Amino acid sequence: MWERRAVAYAHIHSGFEVILYIIEGKVRHEFGPGLKQVIENEAGDFIYIKPGVPHEVFNMSDTEPVVAFVARSSADEWDNIIPYDRNRLECPSL
Image (cartoon, rainbow, N blue to C red; front, side, top):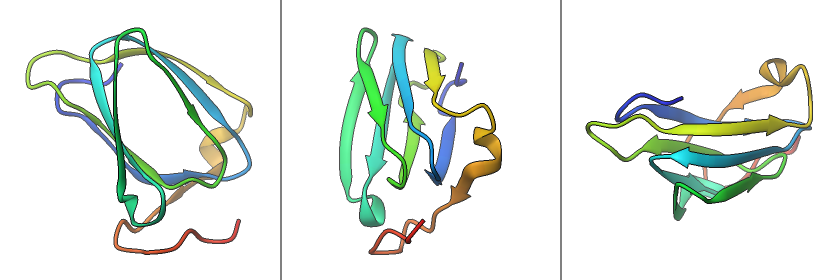
């Protein structure tokens, strides 16, 4: 669950993929080199994030949390999350 206006600051998943199913709420993903691409997802949407793609996720609500089911392909994912500088114009080699 992401609280209202919460942000998962820019980062990269190194060596693992993530699939999310949004149960409640609405999020905005900024992704790709420099986080220049944007997509909004809401309840009922699936989101796939492949390894090595920089992204930042925002709960778009001022009042409601986002509830999502998250599946990761690695049990040690927290050891393989790399912070990403959103001003960087290319993706790092992982």
